Amino acid sequence: MKHDRMEVLTAMMDQGIIPVFYHPDVEICKNVIQACADGGAKCIEFTNRGDFASHVFLDVARHFAKADPSVIMGVGSIVDAPTAGLFIANGAKFVVGPLLNPDVAKVCNRRKIPYSPGCGSASEIGQAEELGCEIVKVFPGSSVGGPEFVKAMLGPCPWTKIMPTGGVEPTEESLKKWFGAGIVCAGVGSNLITKELLAAKDYKGIETKVRETIALVRSIRGK
Image (spheres, rainbow, N blue to C red):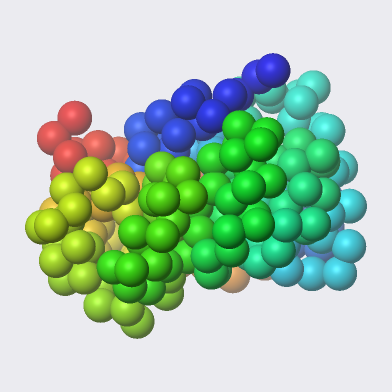
């Protein structure tokens, strides 16, 4: 099987920035995801937001399995186990959620798929780790305490790997705060793939923005 659990987790941490994206149009999704991949972001979180999102995901995942197998398609906004199973069957290589659900962890662990549940407290992070989650999503990032929460959490639990989503901007100021606090990667949605770029179908612009943001993270990390 391509992109096993270890490979996906390593890719997420190495990449640093996980683009978070959904669109009901399959062609637009293909173009945006290819632009992200060309910009250096091979791991993409496709959010389960609209009607028939799983069908759009299947079409897109099938396309990349042939067109660019280096793309690692993950799914976000997963809150229950049946939906996680559906997306895994449709090719999802990692699962992300806004909340922690032990049944989702079981399904993902059974299939060796990384699960990053949304946590907002030390206890939730602890529970997620007991359920086998390697990278824990902190959500909504800015609302639960931002970089200060991350720093405080890593004091007693330095082994915790945190990926905030919500409140992370692709600017030097924002990324320095978050990565300086000790996160391993961050999910970034409309701040990265902006409404303006999408409306103009400026896929080259998306690629450039992704490349610049990943380069910024690399320089902040001193790589």
